[in-house]
Image (cartoon, rainbow, N blue to C red; front, side):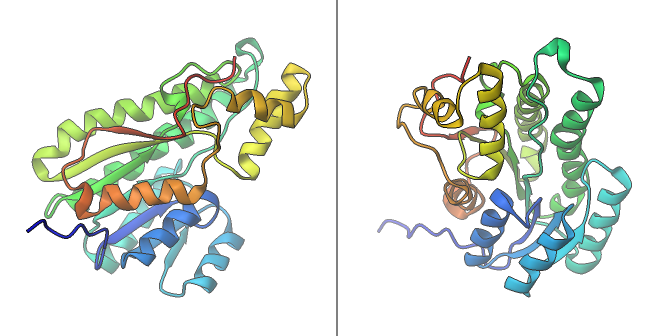
Length: 262
């Protein structure tokens, strides 16, 4: 008889960075729905309060993942509470500037790298000792901009290419300890953040937001955006027994982005 396929995560201990709003909130809700215990961190105190009101079982911390001291404090608290960790979703990230390379400031570059790349490193570095005794799953959020050049978005694209490099390296390094590491590459995700990015692009090209959206979707095979829930569903799959043999992969959830807007 074929074995039943289960996506349940009963008893799994999960941390979702930037887990109180947007894509992170959808990931948090999906993990909870499958039985996981979830800790979220975020830099938005109001969003943290809101997610804990909606889901009293969620624990939370006001944490900037680009700040080493704050990350270490958060993981010390997790270790004290749970004595281990099974799932880390490195979701926190910033869009960075929309600007030509000669107009990109060092401050904008550094902030994007600090959050998207260094923050991912800091959280994984602290998570690994909590996973090594029993194995676990690390999911890093990259982007379609992690496999294509992305004009006017140098810091963002560089950081997301870097996330894929970390993913493949950590999958090899940590595989013998039973720790799986994968990346999710979202495409055009519906929501306010994407609207801001597309608006900035539209302004640089001198066109309207809707014209910019249509131009972007012309380069997506399914001619569609994706939702935060589409991304959350793939993370549940990767972290569940159904995805137990998947590691070192960059999984696109994007309707097949063929190329990014030039």
